[in-house]
Image 1: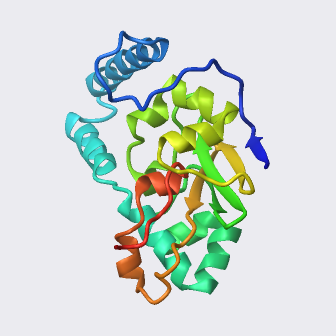
Image 2 (image 1 turned 90 degrees about the horizontal axis):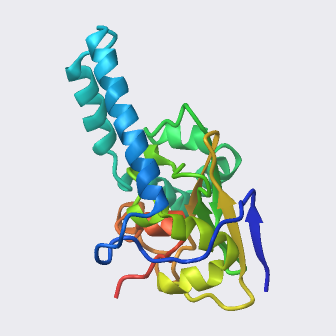
Length: 220
């Protein structure tokens, strides 16, 4: 058994998936509230100074909110069905994403492939860095202090809580996203789906599987 962390930081224990009940505010909540207030103040100042308009801000927010994990799923499905494209994705993920109409100009994108022997999972131990251009907004559990702390310390246990129970022979690699580097997990293609088209496969690929906390399941 091997569990490795790439650039992972140390944090406290404790974990839930973020949306169960109404827990008292955590330190992260206070930090997020601070930056939300700061962001609102900055937006109002930029509008007041005439640097941007309210409509431009609204359009930018709507454009960001319209991005869904379907972009990432198209990339993964293409990689599963096109060996040449897969080679490009593993070599130059930025170019591969741009070729699929999903450019990521502001970060270095790295694709990591799950196999029978290796399982990759993504975290941002400092905040919530994440390939938003491909997967949309990060889920609340991804941003939680509990996930960020525990996934680097006991990844096998956390994955099990997500329903991903890996054998001891599978190496788990935890990749720590940063402001400069974002990761996209290429999940293991489920057995029995080899004859499916890219469009059919796309519908099976979930956001969580491209973060690495879940596996793609074959249709029943």
